[in-house]
Image (cartoon, rainbow, N blue to C red; front, side, top):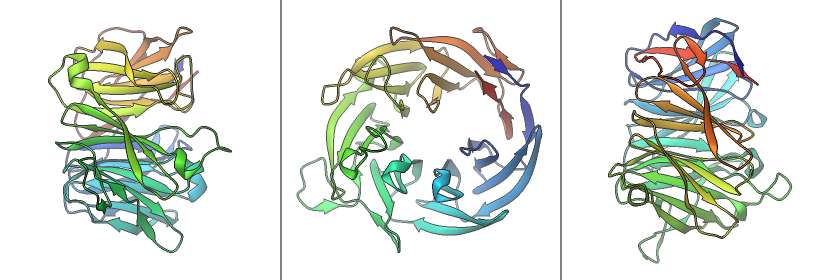
Length: 337
Protein backbone atom coordinates (compact mmCIF):
# COMPACT_ATOMS: atom_id res chain seq x y z
CA UNK A 1 0.00 0.00 0.00
CA UNK A 2 1.28 3.46 -0.80
CA UNK A 3 -0.36 6.68 0.26
CA UNK A 4 -0.20 10.33 -0.60
CA UNK A 5 0.34 12.79 2.25
CA UNK A 6 -2.96 13.64 3.92
CA UNK A 7 -4.60 16.97 3.23
CA UNK A 8 -6.30 18.83 6.07
CA UNK A 9 -8.49 21.86 5.43
CA UNK A 10 -11.03 23.99 7.24
CA UNK A 11 -14.54 23.64 5.83
CA UNK A 12 -16.05 26.83 7.21
CA UNK A 13 -18.87 24.88 8.85
CA UNK A 14 -19.89 26.44 12.17
CA UNK A 15 -20.90 23.09 13.66
CA UNK A 16 -19.44 19.62 14.04
CA UNK A 17 -18.99 17.69 10.79
CA UNK A 18 -21.09 14.52 11.01
CA UNK A 19 -20.18 13.04 7.63
CA UNK A 20 -18.00 13.54 4.56
CA UNK A 21 -18.37 11.55 1.34
CA UNK A 22 -16.41 11.64 -1.93
CA UNK A 23 -18.25 10.87 -5.19
CA UNK A 24 -17.45 7.86 -7.37
CA UNK A 25 -15.00 9.86 -9.49
CA UNK A 26 -13.05 11.03 -6.44
CA UNK A 27 -13.27 14.64 -7.61
CA UNK A 28 -16.11 16.06 -5.50
CA UNK A 29 -16.59 16.01 -1.73
CA UNK A 30 -19.80 16.58 0.23
CA UNK A 31 -19.64 17.52 3.92
CA UNK A 32 -22.58 17.37 6.34
CA UNK A 33 -22.63 19.47 9.47
CA UNK A 34 -24.57 20.28 12.62
CA UNK A 35 -24.99 23.79 11.17
CA UNK A 36 -27.77 22.29 8.93
CA UNK A 37 -25.75 22.82 5.74
CA UNK A 38 -24.19 20.57 3.13
CA UNK A 39 -21.10 21.91 1.41
CA UNK A 40 -19.84 20.68 -1.96
CA UNK A 41 -16.11 20.84 -2.68
CA UNK A 42 -14.15 20.33 -5.87
CA UNK A 43 -10.90 18.45 -5.27
CA UNK A 44 -7.90 19.48 -7.37
CA UNK A 45 -4.83 17.68 -6.07
CA UNK A 46 -4.10 19.21 -2.67
CA UNK A 47 -6.52 22.07 -3.30
CA UNK A 48 -10.18 22.12 -2.23
CA UNK A 49 -12.52 24.67 -3.80
CA UNK A 50 -15.97 25.37 -2.34
CA UNK A 51 -18.42 24.80 -5.19
CA UNK A 52 -21.80 25.13 -3.46
CA UNK A 53 -23.51 25.43 -0.09
CA UNK A 54 -26.78 23.53 0.07
CA UNK A 55 -29.26 25.05 2.52
CA UNK A 56 -32.54 23.20 2.83
CA UNK A 57 -32.59 21.71 6.33
CA UNK A 58 -33.61 23.25 9.63
CA UNK A 59 -31.59 20.88 11.81
CA UNK A 60 -28.22 19.13 11.89
CA UNK A 61 -27.37 17.02 8.83
CA UNK A 62 -26.26 13.58 9.96
CA UNK A 63 -25.27 11.91 6.71
CA UNK A 64 -24.78 12.46 2.99
CA UNK A 65 -24.69 9.93 0.15
CA UNK A 66 -23.84 10.14 -3.56
CA UNK A 67 -25.88 8.40 -6.22
CA UNK A 68 -24.14 6.49 -9.00
CA UNK A 69 -22.81 8.92 -11.65
CA UNK A 70 -24.93 7.10 -14.26
CA UNK A 71 -27.87 9.11 -12.85
CA UNK A 72 -26.00 12.43 -12.87
CA UNK A 73 -24.62 14.44 -9.95
CA UNK A 74 -27.09 13.66 -7.16
CA UNK A 75 -26.45 13.76 -3.43
CA UNK A 76 -28.82 12.91 -0.59
CA UNK A 77 -28.79 14.46 2.88
CA UNK A 78 -30.37 13.02 6.04
CA UNK A 79 -31.28 15.43 8.83
CA UNK A 80 -32.62 15.68 12.35
CA UNK A 81 -35.47 17.83 10.97
CA UNK A 82 -37.30 14.61 9.95
CA UNK A 83 -36.53 15.04 6.25
CA UNK A 84 -34.26 13.61 3.58
CA UNK A 85 -33.42 15.83 0.62
CA UNK A 86 -32.20 14.74 -2.81
CA UNK A 87 -30.10 17.47 -4.40
CA UNK A 88 -29.41 17.56 -8.14
CA UNK A 89 -26.64 19.50 -9.86
CA UNK A 90 -27.95 21.36 -12.91
CA UNK A 91 -24.54 22.71 -13.83
CA UNK A 92 -21.27 23.28 -12.03
CA UNK A 93 -22.04 25.00 -8.73
CA UNK A 94 -25.79 25.22 -9.39
CA UNK A 95 -27.81 22.75 -7.31
CA UNK A 96 -31.55 22.35 -6.78
CA UNK A 97 -33.77 20.49 -4.33
CA UNK A 98 -34.94 17.66 -6.59
CA UNK A 99 -37.03 15.83 -4.00
CA UNK A 100 -37.83 16.31 -0.33
CA UNK A 101 -39.05 13.24 1.57
CA UNK A 102 -40.92 14.48 4.64
CA UNK A 103 -42.92 11.40 5.65
CA UNK A 104 -40.54 10.46 8.45
CA UNK A 105 -41.75 10.46 12.05
CA UNK A 106 -38.34 11.19 13.53
CA UNK A 107 -34.82 12.29 12.73
CA UNK A 108 -33.34 10.70 9.60
CA UNK A 109 -30.14 9.09 10.83
CA UNK A 110 -28.77 7.35 7.74
CA UNK A 111 -29.27 7.04 3.99
CA UNK A 112 -27.74 5.01 1.18
CA UNK A 113 -28.43 4.71 -2.55
CA UNK A 114 -29.08 1.26 -3.97
CA UNK A 115 -26.67 -0.43 -6.39
CA UNK A 116 -27.27 1.27 -9.77
CA UNK A 117 -28.51 -1.93 -11.42
CA UNK A 118 -31.71 -1.53 -9.35
CA UNK A 119 -32.35 1.95 -10.71
CA UNK A 120 -32.33 5.19 -8.74
CA UNK A 121 -33.63 4.40 -5.26
CA UNK A 122 -32.52 5.15 -1.74
CA UNK A 123 -33.11 3.67 1.71
CA UNK A 124 -33.20 5.81 4.84
CA UNK A 125 -33.20 4.96 8.56
CA UNK A 126 -35.30 6.94 11.01
CA UNK A 127 -35.15 7.73 14.70
CA UNK A 128 -38.60 6.21 15.22
CA UNK A 129 -37.19 2.77 14.36
CA UNK A 130 -38.43 2.63 10.78
CA UNK A 131 -36.72 2.33 7.40
CA UNK A 132 -38.15 3.85 4.22
CA UNK A 133 -37.26 3.03 0.60
CA UNK A 134 -37.85 5.79 -1.95
CA UNK A 135 -37.77 5.08 -5.70
CA UNK A 136 -37.63 7.36 -8.73
CA UNK A 137 -40.62 6.40 -10.88
CA UNK A 138 -39.77 8.80 -13.69
CA UNK A 139 -42.41 11.48 -13.21
CA UNK A 140 -42.46 11.27 -9.41
CA UNK A 141 -41.03 9.43 -6.43
CA UNK A 142 -42.78 6.47 -4.80
CA UNK A 143 -42.28 4.86 -1.41
CA UNK A 144 -42.13 1.07 -1.20
CA UNK A 145 -45.01 -0.51 0.69
CA UNK A 146 -43.77 -2.65 3.58
CA UNK A 147 -45.90 -4.77 5.94
CA UNK A 148 -45.32 -4.22 9.64
CA UNK A 149 -43.06 -6.74 11.38
CA UNK A 150 -45.48 -6.86 14.32
CA UNK A 151 -48.20 -8.62 12.33
CA UNK A 152 -50.53 -5.75 11.42
CA UNK A 153 -52.20 -6.66 8.13
CA UNK A 154 -52.54 -3.10 6.86
CA UNK A 155 -49.52 -2.12 4.80
CA UNK A 156 -47.55 1.00 5.61
CA UNK A 157 -44.81 2.85 3.77
CA UNK A 158 -42.16 2.17 6.40
CA UNK A 159 -40.36 -0.89 7.72
CA UNK A 160 -40.99 -1.17 11.47
CA UNK A 161 -37.40 -2.27 11.73
CA UNK A 162 -36.36 -1.64 15.35
CA UNK A 163 -37.88 -1.10 18.78
CA UNK A 164 -35.57 1.87 19.32
CA UNK A 165 -34.04 4.17 16.74
CA UNK A 166 -32.90 2.82 13.39
CA UNK A 167 -29.30 3.99 13.30
CA UNK A 168 -28.00 2.76 9.93
CA UNK A 169 -29.11 1.11 6.70
CA UNK A 170 -27.21 -0.50 3.82
CA UNK A 171 -27.98 -2.40 0.61
CA UNK A 172 -26.94 -5.92 -0.20
CA UNK A 173 -25.09 -6.44 -3.48
CA UNK A 174 -27.13 -7.66 -6.47
CA UNK A 175 -26.46 -11.20 -7.75
CA UNK A 176 -24.99 -9.65 -10.92
CA UNK A 177 -25.81 -6.71 -13.15
CA UNK A 178 -27.60 -9.01 -15.61
CA UNK A 179 -29.57 -10.92 -12.97
CA UNK A 180 -30.52 -7.93 -10.80
CA UNK A 181 -34.27 -7.50 -10.37
CA UNK A 182 -36.50 -5.72 -7.88
CA UNK A 183 -37.14 -9.06 -6.15
CA UNK A 184 -33.41 -9.55 -5.53
CA UNK A 185 -33.15 -6.36 -3.48
CA UNK A 186 -31.88 -6.83 0.07
CA UNK A 187 -31.35 -4.44 2.95
CA UNK A 188 -29.70 -4.57 6.35
CA UNK A 189 -30.75 -2.14 9.07
CA UNK A 190 -29.13 -1.49 12.45
CA UNK A 191 -30.76 -0.14 15.58
CA UNK A 192 -30.31 1.18 19.08
CA UNK A 193 -31.99 -2.05 20.24
CA UNK A 194 -28.72 -3.87 19.53
CA UNK A 195 -30.11 -5.76 16.53
CA UNK A 196 -29.47 -5.94 12.79
CA UNK A 197 -32.43 -6.87 10.57
CA UNK A 198 -32.11 -8.45 7.11
CA UNK A 199 -34.85 -7.61 4.56
CA UNK A 200 -35.85 -8.96 1.13
CA UNK A 201 -38.14 -7.24 -1.40
CA UNK A 202 -40.44 -8.61 -4.06
CA UNK A 203 -41.31 -7.18 -7.48
CA UNK A 204 -44.21 -5.18 -6.03
CA UNK A 205 -42.04 -3.41 -3.49
CA UNK A 206 -43.21 -5.45 -0.51
CA UNK A 207 -40.45 -6.16 2.00
CA UNK A 208 -40.14 -9.19 4.28
CA UNK A 209 -37.80 -9.59 7.22
CA UNK A 210 -35.59 -12.65 6.65
CA UNK A 211 -33.64 -12.65 9.89
CA UNK A 212 -33.16 -10.56 13.00
CA UNK A 213 -29.61 -10.77 14.38
CA UNK A 214 -29.19 -10.13 18.10
CA UNK A 215 -25.78 -8.49 17.78
CA UNK A 216 -25.65 -7.21 21.36
CA UNK A 217 -26.55 -10.62 22.79
CA UNK A 218 -24.27 -12.58 20.46
CA UNK A 219 -21.25 -10.36 21.10
CA UNK A 220 -22.06 -9.76 24.77
CA UNK A 221 -22.12 -5.97 24.43
CA UNK A 222 -24.96 -3.97 25.99
CA UNK A 223 -24.73 -1.21 23.36
CA UNK A 224 -26.62 -0.03 20.30
CA UNK A 225 -25.37 -0.84 16.81
CA UNK A 226 -23.93 2.33 15.28
CA UNK A 227 -23.36 1.08 11.75
CA UNK A 228 -23.76 -1.91 9.45
CA UNK A 229 -22.06 -2.36 6.08
CA UNK A 230 -22.73 -5.17 3.58
CA UNK A 231 -19.65 -6.30 1.68
CA UNK A 232 -19.99 -5.84 -2.09
CA UNK A 233 -19.23 -8.94 -4.12
CA UNK A 234 -18.47 -12.37 -2.77
CA UNK A 235 -15.23 -13.70 -1.31
CA UNK A 236 -14.25 -16.81 0.59
CA UNK A 237 -17.48 -16.39 2.57
CA UNK A 238 -20.62 -15.75 0.54
CA UNK A 239 -22.14 -12.73 2.33
CA UNK A 240 -20.47 -10.63 5.03
CA UNK A 241 -21.77 -7.80 7.22
CA UNK A 242 -19.45 -5.50 9.16
CA UNK A 243 -21.13 -4.31 12.36
CA UNK A 244 -20.03 -1.52 14.71
CA UNK A 245 -21.20 -1.89 18.32
CA UNK A 246 -19.56 -0.18 21.29
CA UNK A 247 -15.80 -0.60 21.03
CA UNK A 248 -16.16 -3.81 19.02
CA UNK A 249 -16.09 -4.56 15.32
CA UNK A 250 -18.00 -7.70 14.40
CA UNK A 251 -18.35 -9.49 11.09
CA UNK A 252 -21.37 -11.69 10.52
CA UNK A 253 -21.31 -14.21 7.67
CA UNK A 254 -23.84 -16.14 5.62
CA UNK A 255 -22.27 -19.19 4.01
CA UNK A 256 -24.95 -19.41 1.29
CA UNK A 257 -28.08 -17.48 0.32
CA UNK A 258 -31.00 -18.55 2.48
CA UNK A 259 -28.88 -19.73 5.40
CA UNK A 260 -28.77 -18.01 8.78
CA UNK A 261 -26.22 -15.32 9.54
CA UNK A 262 -23.71 -16.11 12.29
CA UNK A 263 -20.82 -14.34 14.00
CA UNK A 264 -17.62 -14.76 12.00
CA UNK A 265 -15.13 -12.46 13.77
CA UNK A 266 -15.22 -10.28 16.89
CA UNK A 267 -12.57 -7.59 17.41
CA UNK A 268 -11.99 -5.26 20.34
CA UNK A 269 -10.90 -1.90 18.87
CA UNK A 270 -10.14 -0.01 22.09
CA UNK A 271 -12.31 2.98 21.14
CA UNK A 272 -15.95 3.44 20.15
CA UNK A 273 -16.40 2.28 16.56
CA UNK A 274 -18.46 4.74 14.53
CA UNK A 275 -18.50 3.62 10.91
CA UNK A 276 -17.42 0.78 8.62
CA UNK A 277 -16.96 1.07 4.86
CA UNK A 278 -15.92 -1.50 2.24
CA UNK A 279 -14.05 -0.66 -0.93
CA UNK A 280 -15.78 -1.29 -4.27
CA UNK A 281 -14.46 -4.83 -4.60
CA UNK A 282 -15.18 -5.78 -0.99
CA UNK A 283 -11.54 -6.69 -0.32
CA UNK A 284 -10.66 -3.84 2.06
CA UNK A 285 -12.64 -2.62 5.08
CA UNK A 286 -12.03 0.81 6.62
CA UNK A 287 -13.28 1.51 10.13
CA UNK A 288 -13.44 4.94 11.81
CA UNK A 289 -13.01 5.23 15.58
CA UNK A 290 -13.81 7.76 18.27
CA UNK A 291 -10.14 8.76 18.59
CA UNK A 292 -10.18 10.14 15.05
CA UNK A 293 -8.25 7.28 13.45
CA UNK A 294 -9.19 4.94 10.62
CA UNK A 295 -8.16 1.27 10.80
CA UNK A 296 -7.82 -0.60 7.52
CA UNK A 297 -8.40 -4.36 7.23
CA UNK A 298 -7.84 -6.79 4.37
CA UNK A 299 -9.21 -10.29 3.89
CA UNK A 300 -6.76 -13.18 3.67
CA UNK A 301 -7.20 -16.41 1.68
CA UNK A 302 -9.07 -18.04 4.56
CA UNK A 303 -11.66 -15.27 4.65
CA UNK A 304 -10.33 -13.72 7.88
CA UNK A 305 -9.54 -10.01 8.07
CA UNK A 306 -6.23 -8.68 9.34
CA UNK A 307 -5.34 -5.07 10.06
CA UNK A 308 -2.60 -3.90 7.74
CA UNK A 309 -2.71 -0.12 8.20
CA UNK A 310 -4.15 2.75 10.14
CA UNK A 311 -4.65 6.33 9.00
CA UNK A 312 -4.56 9.52 11.02
CA UNK A 313 -3.71 13.19 10.51
CA UNK A 314 -0.08 12.37 9.75
CA UNK A 315 -0.71 9.78 7.05
CA UNK A 316 -1.11 6.03 6.52
CA UNK A 317 1.04 3.77 8.70
CA UNK A 318 1.56 0.11 9.59
CA UNK A 319 -0.62 -1.12 12.47
CA UNK A 320 0.04 0.73 15.72
CA UNK A 321 -1.43 3.30 18.13
CA UNK A 322 -2.97 6.20 16.18
CA UNK A 323 -3.03 9.88 17.02
CA UNK A 324 -6.35 11.57 17.75
CA UNK A 325 -7.99 14.23 15.59
CA UNK A 326 -11.42 15.78 15.67
CA UNK A 327 -13.29 19.03 15.02
CA UNK A 328 -14.64 20.94 12.04
CA UNK A 329 -11.77 20.12 9.69
CA UNK A 330 -11.60 17.33 7.14
CA UNK A 331 -8.64 15.02 6.63
CA UNK A 332 -8.50 13.58 3.12
CA UNK A 333 -6.43 10.41 2.66
CA UNK A 334 -5.93 8.94 -0.80
CA UNK A 335 -4.75 5.35 -1.03
CA UNK A 336 -3.91 3.15 -3.98
CA UNK A 337 -2.84 -0.46 -4.08
